[in-house]
Picture 1: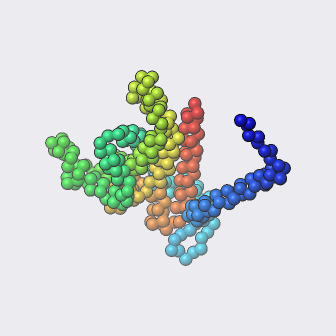
Picture 2: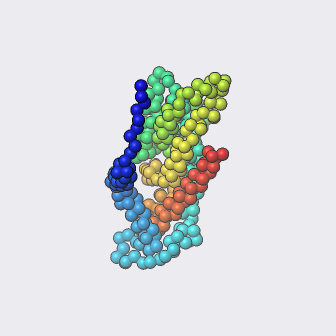
Picture 3: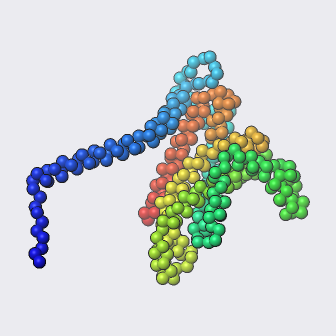
Length: 323
């Protein structure tokens, strides 16, 4: 049987194929731009434009509800944040509280989310219920979560935490003002934030765990690797990029903490000096002093801090993953 002979492509056919490729690329580019246009417009209108406005406002002395027009101050608002004795005291205290909050929340919440994801990735009876149970706090509004924790941390003997401690110790430990004391107020806010946010990171890591091929674990079993060795050499490398994303996301959220602090301070009388954050300080500049320029300067400084820390984290984590 004779083998089929391929017909050579004529010059006109070659020219048609070559001419068709730029058209296809242009169509793909056009379709991509059109599909991403709504998201780009949203970013421009709700992120880029407000941030540019904040930078401009930070260069002026803008007093809300004042008949005087804004006065150009240049970098005065930024300088006063670090040099003015009255303003810098509140700002630096908020900055320290924010860093302490982030240094605790980022590793603890990420580690706890990884542990829960690994446990809930097993094929066990009722595992869907536990996944829903741990994710449920994420669905609750932060206002509701803060109100619930206000009842838990209530300073009276009827508070859930005080009643539990009194029951366990037989009444030897008196009721504590968990939110009013400077020694425990920030820790209470940290505990609330971890409880409320760990489910979100858990779901992200859980999705990554389910993408790891089962053949890798079968090969590890053949090599007689124990559970810890499989976790270190199979699980962690398989979700490394997801862990980097979770750490970066948790960092950004940790420096943007505001809702729970504001609600607990306003409704439960939490210690303001021990719990106020940069965003809380910025809003207080508006609410208490009607100073929109200073609030904008604090927001710009917060943005710069987040960007710097995120770039450092990304560089360090990338070097470790490549190494």
